[in-house]
Image 1: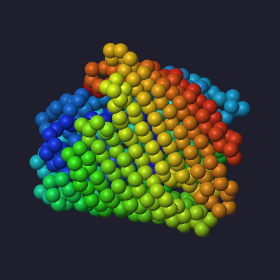
Image 2: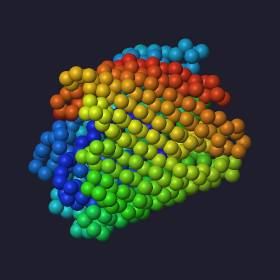
Image 3: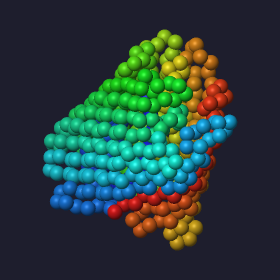
Image 4: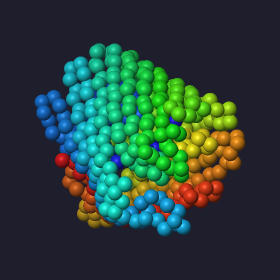
Length: 416
């Protein structure tokens, strides 16, 4: 299942190297990651770095939001939505070290959220994960794991800021068949547990607490010095703690293309085909294409386009609707105005297709967001911005899910 949780922005760092050096490093890049370790860097950071012997440390702070929220609880218009002032920040630290026979990558963060009036929405969360790759000539065992405890909206369907804990333990074996190609096999175990979270009268711990086992095998190679391809298959078992009829197995084949930061167009594209088979005979089998993309394209040296896309499945919090298919598209454009000042406009459009249950009428919900910002770019490649955002969700069948939400806030990603 492809998940789209609402998370804090993470500072991404890349290393610039010669094509041959890049090929060697990509040949030994991370594969077989789990849901938490997939965001870990497998290349040496070069900005905002403190060095302690062979260990590189990159601390940072992301001010996710400092401003006003017109609809704290995503309530429909007829329920007089509650507004409040909010401050949210994420101090974090990335650690990287590459020794003769070992590569270490780790990340730790604390998600701090404060609401002036509604104390129930305040939270101090944390996230830590790490991975060890043992560089034993061509044979490279690896192991990773992590834990995240947070109080956020996990996806576009759920309006409640839910207490949620996620754990991961993963590992596998990679074998370098050439300086720029490898094969691998891996497995990962992850757990999702909700606590004290109610959505439309449904206890999320009863409907969504689950374990996941995923087994993966694949092949990765560099097509060019600036483009790599990963082909892999996976088999997934989802086991729900309190709703065994929601259990499901999935088989998938995927292809991921990564475009190096030195190329004109950069980003990651994944396309795949998934076959999901729920245990419940009233839940429809899903067979279809899935994928996601994040692409950056510079325009006339003064602007930059950002494109994101998602197609995947997500378990609904309501067991009577089983799961939904999400189709999302996001577009943003940033234009340099003068000096270090720029302006950005952005929009995102999501369609949630509920047609998985034979005994429930199908319907399609939408979630659309439009916004913009005026920003100032600092010398350390970070940006401080004043933002405006307008979000609107519409459900033709369930009026309680409709809402309008506006935000005016300051954001800032700062690297030491």
